[in-house]
Figure (cartoon, helix red, strand yellow):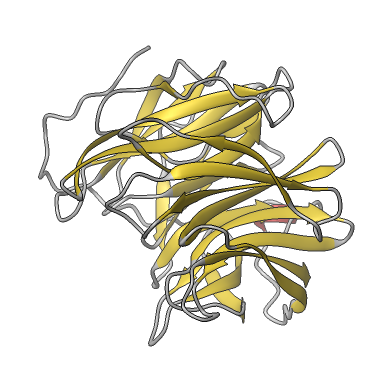
Length: 330
């Protein structure tokens, strides 16, 4: 395993603004008349004082949703719970992952090329309620109920946020440094989910949580917190970036079979909201605010039966941070 250690904290990173030639399908502009409709929204879990940071997966004709449970947003040691449902209506607990002295958070589900479930998590060490250090964790399961012990990957201080599998290779961006320190991001690839090979540095300002997806021509698209869309072609060492002009937290997006990109995350303003947006390689536009507020965002997104199914967390109902599931007609 190769880890890319940082010894150049504080340097200024060059900013590249993209001029993108979009191909048919996913590369054309977003529909300016897009008007998605909220079909339903339901609170599906609230059994801990603070339930947050979701992901959603359709696997073997059932739903899996994962999230962190703790007493608050940060500073304490959280656990990761996986719940399941046959229909998206009735939900039951399937597994709880924990590590003594570790705050497990931001879990992300994916299907490994060998068919196993893979769960990626951040693992933070807090001392006296304050952040001390961190490193990513991964666990694997054949059934969603029994998981391997969370194993540490990459080096200390990494935050490997989401793995996207494409042609049997997993791709992910890891951010380094916290708080006001200059953040840097690095693109990695993996064949097994445990050993990660450095590809390139993602040189854009303030890089943080990043979701990657692929177009039919293998172009990689990145939606990057706080306000960037990135594009790169194989071997993914050279990138162009567009500033979308507005911040987004907990970014996620998907590409429909028709080639349209839909994104979701925290919309900032007078009040925080979880919001759905249309996007292209150069544009990003919020089009639908979900019932949400306060501490909210970190959506999971799945297309199923003609609808967008989206998990997210919010504290708008009575101030308690809970897990919600929305169905949206695009």
